[in-house]
Amino acid sequence: MPRTIPPWKIKRKLLVKAEGTTDPKYGHKPNERPAEEYIRYGIINLDKTSGPSSHEVAAWVKRILGLTQVGHGGTLEV
Image (tube, rainbow, N blue to C red; front, side, top):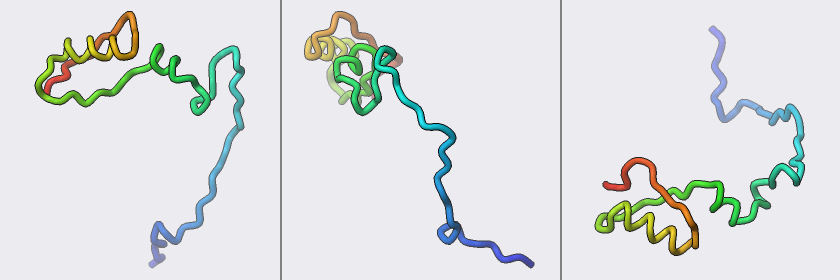
């Protein structure tokens, strides 16, 4: 009967299919992307505590970040 090799003893190597580059006119590398773009095109994952309503928290985020539009998906309630 063949013996099974434990996973920690298997020799592995990283395979890279292709190296890519980002053309600056189409965006930024994630680690070089300005915070303003994360705010403008991104999502803020927020863990809301009990107490303030979802509407209040969305209004606070809008005011703190100086945004014109803010919304929330689903419920922020516990």
